[in-house]
Amino acid sequence: MDTDLHELLRGLRVWEPGVTELPPFDPAAAPAEPLALFTRWFADAVAAGEREPHTVSLATSDEEGRPDVRIVMLHGADADGWSFATHAHSRKGRHLAARPEAALAFYWPLRGRQVRVRGPVAVAPPEQAQADLHARSAGALAAALTGHQSEVLGSLEELARASESAWERARSAPHTEAPSWTLYRLHPTEVEFFQGETHRRHVRLRYRRTDTAWTRELLWP
Ligand SMILES: Cc1cc2nc3c(=O)[nH]c(=O)nc-3n(C[C@H](O)[C@H](O)[C@H](O)COP(=O)(O)O)c2cc1C
Image 1 (cartoon, rainbow, N blue to C red):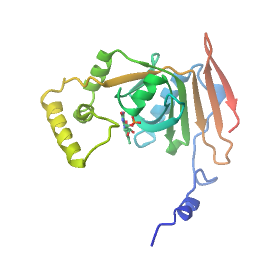
Image 2 (image 1 turned 180 degrees about the horizontal axis):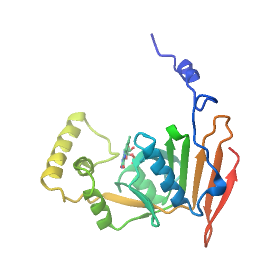
Image 3 (image 1 turned 60 degrees about the horizontal axis):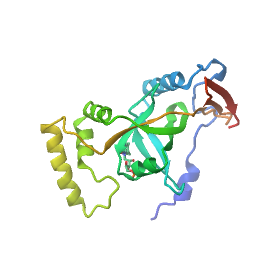
């Protein structure tokens, strides 16, 4: 029998009062800048056993302003911005070349938390991208060396051949460069922290960058 998608959807719940335990969040006690709070929430997501807390939705838009979104790995967050890496010629790479602006959304369901980050995106120096890649796993290098990301693929056999030879190179020459592999840094103008609450009194705290500092404001959920 075919799955009834709508029935499945109706049966699913988030945040049931008296059932789900979510942490409190006091925005009055939040730090003056978002990176400190992001680091705290990220460490908390790891400690809570959140699966792959470093995966994040990355939204970009094409030259006509049409949006797109996909998951990438977070490579870092510091004074230079939130960083991720991909191929410059991929769809998102082309979007970022045309419109160097992006947004990130993290979701950590065990803690009922979402973090949204938006702002302009800059390309890091190529040597930083290669160093970052070489500090990662053989699999990450093999994936980067396989190349052709977002191009139409003729067959899975073609992928298997390219991937096998990329794995061989990644293992035998771990410092091989993947020239199109690019490290991007999103320099946030806005960072929003959302703490889910079972009675739907979710707490939203938005940081907005001004010339000199960050302003903080609450948002209706
Ligand atoms: C868990 C997960 C992590 C991923 N991490 C990356 C990444 O760090 N960089 C990347 O280029 N693609 C990553 N991908 C693949 C992207 O989601 C996407 O399929 C690919 O980058 C092509 O996107 P595009 O055609 O919009 O450029 C990841 C996918 C998943 C599911």
